[in-house]
Structures are given as C-alpha cells and as structure tokens.
Length: 119
Image (cartoon, rainbow, N blue to C red; front, side, top):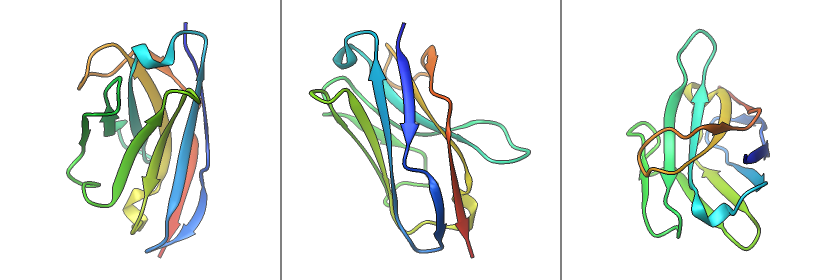
C-alpha cells in the first residue's frame, strides 16, 4: 500500500502560481511512477502530468504543457506540481496518483486538494 497526501491548493488569481505537493508513505517511493490528475465540477477526472521513477522522464497534458512542471524528490518521498500562468479553467480538485507503469493511471490515490483560479 502507498498512502498519498496532497497539499498546497488554494485560491489564486488568473496569471498567478501555486505549487502542489504530494507526500508518499508506505512503500519505496522511488519504485513508483507518479501522476497528477484533476477533476473539475461536472467533468471527468483528467490526466495532468506524469514523472518516471528517477525524474528523468515527464509528460504533460496539452492544456498545461509549458505552464506546469512536475518534479520529484525521492529523498523526501514527495512529488510536486508547479503551476504557473494559471487560468480559470485550471480550477479543479487535483489528485496525486502512484503506479508502476509510465503513462498509465496507477492504483493509489490521494484525497485531493482544491485549486481555484479566479478571473
């Protein structure tokens, strides 16, 4: 089992920045691919970004590419999502996700953190 706890969400104006964190515990963090997903009201959960075990490979949804950066610190068992140039359409609950296969949704989820971007 892997336990994931997100933090760092909040209310920000359009054009602003936030950094989300996801702290992992329970299993060897560096064995897991880490993902961020988000879910806006009335919409399905969607992929945002992924990072491989070492942090050497990343991939992003087209809607956030160039604005968001995913990173990880295996010594701290933490994955981050730096979000810049935020837009109102980025408003959603952001979820951390852990799995074994790069590019695929994993089995473990955090509880989510709310990000609200005002116009």
